[in-house]
Length: 225
Image (cartoon, rainbow, N blue to C red):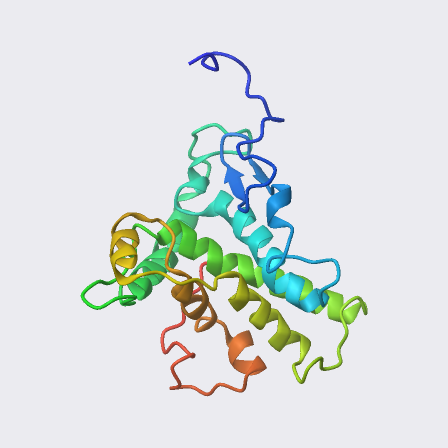
C-alpha cells in the first residue's frame, strides 16, 4: 500500500539471492536472475558453453520474450498498462498463440488429465521463443570460435545444446501432484517444457536426424517468434 502513488523503484528485486528462479517484471520492464540460478544444471563456468546456452541461455531468452507474450505485451516500455501494438500485429500474434494453446491442450501428463493450453500459454510461448534466441546465440558463438565445433562425448554442439536444455527441466512428480499442477500451474510439467518445445523446432530435428512423422517432429509446428 505504501508504494501507491510513488515512483517505481527500478532497483527493487522481487526474489532473494539464493532463489533458484528468474522472472520478467512488466512494471519495471526488466529481467532478473538471482545468484541461486547460476549453478548446474542451469550454468557452470566449467561447463561446455553449448550446454550453458541450452541451460541459462534458454532461461534468459524465456524471460526476455515474456515482454511480448499474452500478458507482457499489454505493458509498454515504461511499464504502463497501455496498448501499443498495431491491429495487424495483434491479429497475427493471436493466430500464432492459438496454435500453441491448441497444441499443448492435446498433451496428457497423467491419465485422465490434459494440459490447459490457455492457462499455460504465456509460459509455453516463452519456452518456445526463448530457446530460439539461445540457439541463435549458440550458432553465433560457433561461428566466432567461442563454442567448439568438435564433438564432445560423441555429441555435436547443437546436440549438446538440446541436452543441456532437457536437463534443466528434469523432475519427478507423483500423479496426484501432476493432477493438481495441471489445473493450477501456469507452467507446463517439465516433460512438455522439453518435448512440447523441441518438436516445434526444425533445428532439433536436424541435430538428431529426426524425420517427418516421428514423435519428436510436429506435423503442425507452432511458432510465435
